[in-house]
Length: 167
Image (cartoon, rainbow, N blue to C red):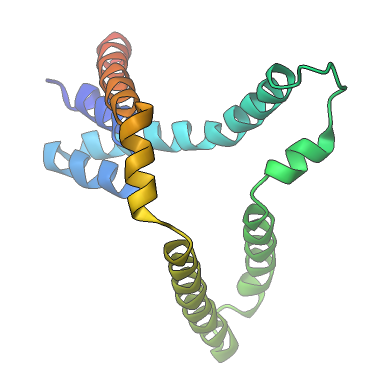
């Protein structure tokens, strides 16, 4: 299999970006570049896709014929994204101005420390509110596991076909 095809296939069918890069690195450097680009393109389209699905879902689950509501989108929108954009904008403006100074090093260390703390708090918060026994029972009875396996097999097949077709 050609490196470009392998990289494209890995980038399109492996879920996490880190796993994509690690898997493609086994094949070769060019495969890693192609896989990372394919994954970047797929990840960048997720926001648009989620918004389209939210619009569609609102119209399909609205049997009373109510008009479209922006509140529905705001209610379902993950608000942490706004915080991410705000922090990214502030750091993108601030850090280049103070680059090479002790203040820049202090800000970067503080951001890394805050990142670790907030990640830990979020991780524990999710864990406290999760009942694994109920989650497992619901997954087994609903067909979610079979649906996940079938959709992944379909994804892998389509990704392989498109990789051969494009590369």
